[in-house]
Length: 262
Image (cartoon, rainbow, N blue to C red; front, side, top):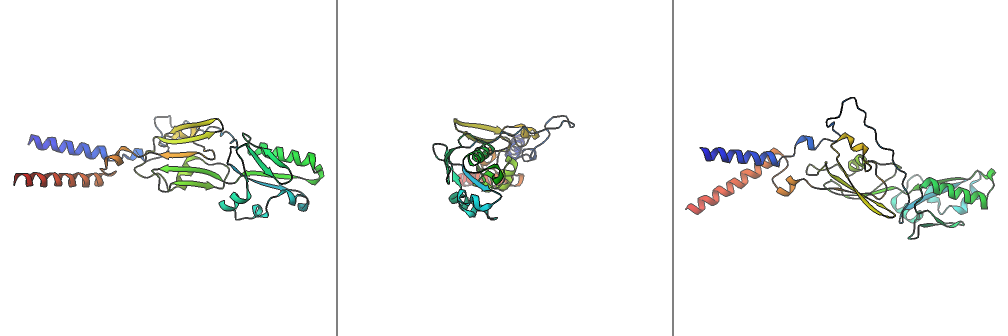
């Protein structure tokens, strides 16, 4: 009888430890903070351009014919923009941090924001080629917000989102969400700068995650969701799965003992 109780406690402990608690699956929980406290996200730092970034640049004027020569392709003005057209018709930042524009030639953009690049191009055009009356209007954007996600999500790989800002919750949702076996409490974000890289850890089950520097992504960020220990144990992530695994192991163990005794 005593041995039976010990076996029962042992099996119950394994069953309990192998299950993924509900609290580990819920995003942005209130973990002991006053209920009336308002959590606000940090101001997002402007992204500064790096090598291999691709820019979409459009130059407009009151008379469109005046600036036709400065625009590389009319494809950029179409409504349906694909990643392929951006790659072939956008302006890629080379290893020296330059882009090459029609007529204007090489312009250094490494470490600048898209707004600073816009101001630089407008200034060059107004000083060298046009008067104020021409109404030069320049639009500079990244040719898609690119990030890479790997690990315990349903859709891994490099993604491109056509919007200016993106937070980690949107990126994960766009990747089919984190699987049950994924660790939401320790999501890694690797961010590259011209001078090197930095790794952030963010707990997405805590509502204070919005205060993390990694909550709002920057282009070319790499997101990694590591697996929970339950996956490496192979016992299952739910009570039913764990119980099934334990019953199978016990059946095999019992069968082996019976065969040995025969």
